[in-house]
Length: 111
Image 1: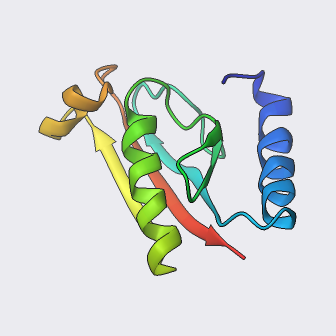
Image 2: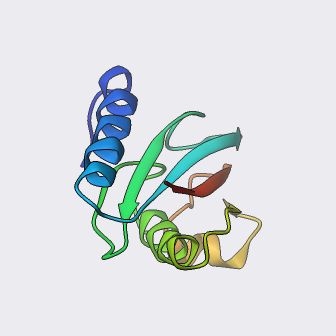
Image 3: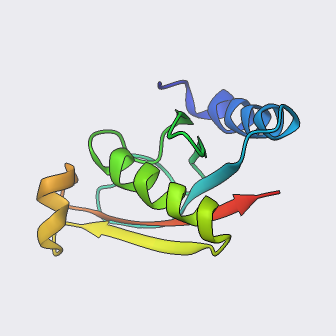
């Protein structure tokens, strides 16, 4: 689900608020740092609920799947985490970040 960058952050944060109000457990993933060629800019968001539903984008490709999986753990434990993906990491090729850059994504529970 991609949107233009300006409306995307607002839309994702509104979705996070709406999901919380409806009783869903929610985590928010935010790109906090990028190096080199990164698919999404710093400040990009992905909101995830306890069932793995998500909206927004932190990278595109399979990185989102890895972030969603970690976000479900964050929801269950209540403990935030920082994830890093990049071509220096063998898993980057598996999760689809082969653009030559690296990204750091902060995942936090929203209450």
